[in-house]
Length: 399
Image 1: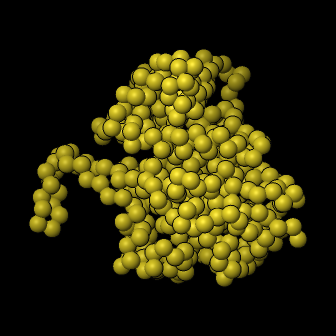
Image 2 (image 1 turned 180 degrees about the vertical axis):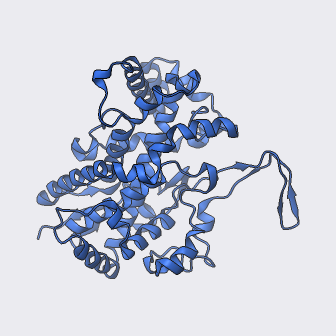
């Protein structure tokens, strides 16, 4: 899909996929993410400090840039020895967001011609910049990931560099995976998968949630009331596990996952050794089967008025919420469901709670047209708005 045939997401063989996925699974369990949540919270705090800087000057904020910097710092701090410091960069490092849009917009081409990226990687940078400019940003980042992983590999046995919490790739290089699975080239493919999936999908969800909440004063008032009771001091956020127990915030998170889709592309699944019966049809073993989440999340018989943001549809969580969650496939289902689902969900809880407890009631959408900047227009593996969209933009009013 992205010129990464040996990454986790592209591994076809079930046994190989299981082996590679299991190497990451401990990092992304719910318990591990709760332990990691203070780092995510520190990223939320830094995001809010940057938003406060923009509020004091009245500057416009591109939510996709701001939230992608937040999610990018959270996932790279987990993946590598240090985060990329995107939240420290001017205007929330828009080049980082453009990197992923460059990769995603080329996904259909790379899916049909997977040899393009390996071929491109053999060219010098000047050649790529001159003759393949749309792929030049991806090329530079691939080189960066390779250098990072090679650096970790070179210092892997130096105990003085070990930290209290080794990063994902430090741990993998110390593992008993087969040599090819730990090769720099293959881990670069996983780096693109982990960092990309951990950055762009959740930032889109956060941007859409902020847009819909801000545009509906009733929803925003209910959220602020719940957050004020749970967080009397906006600068003293409760732990993740307490936020997960807030019913209205939880309903907002579920509705956000529904309306943002997660992945809009069809994700093929193959049953290798059994036939599958569907109505009068019998699908033989080895038949690829796929369906986009859009068709499920927008199905009016399951979710009435599907293009309206309605957190109340999930309430009460114990009954109606539990019933509807079996139709929620933002993270897919089964053995190939999204590896980082608990990290993404934690970022939604902590991010929305932090931003709206501090700035709720003062965020104002500007220069944004729903049909152009919000609604799904393109499937670039993840949902995308119109090509001419400048993103969802807001200003935060001064008291």
